[in-house]
Length: 189
Image: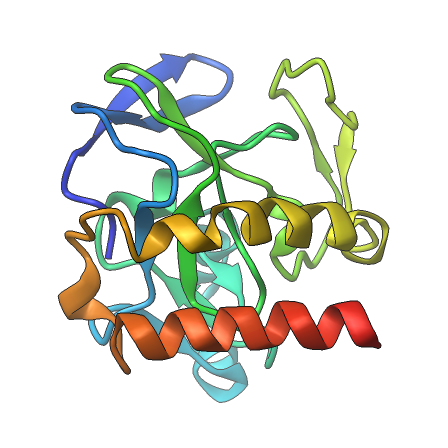
């Protein structure tokens, strides 16, 4: 489920569409949460789809840690990649958090390197930190930096109004504790 203050706009003919804030979204806001309306396609379901459906899922779905394809129930499928993302999700948490204040008209982006990519993607983000290519191998290379970014906004999650709180499976406090535990475990291993 995508934050309610987001709309779909054309970025340009090459990139296509993207998500843009319609109102101010403060740093620490949950901008997306995996909810019960998302479509999950496991390996068996994927094998029964034809090439047209497979191509659509390759473009608009992401793979979770189990290899299932997740298709967002709303416009979340149009979130573009940036090597300097405005939001980030930590694998296994099923929530995405604003890393910085997002102003009306700002594009809301994620780093696709945090997703379980099946193949390399040419990056067109235009960021000063652009990697040029987004790869599955980005996770171990950038994971510590990504975790540090999440850790920096985690305390703000409790202090920020959360329009998506009702869609968190276990509730906000449980999810924050889960995130903190994942970060703590990653730092000690």
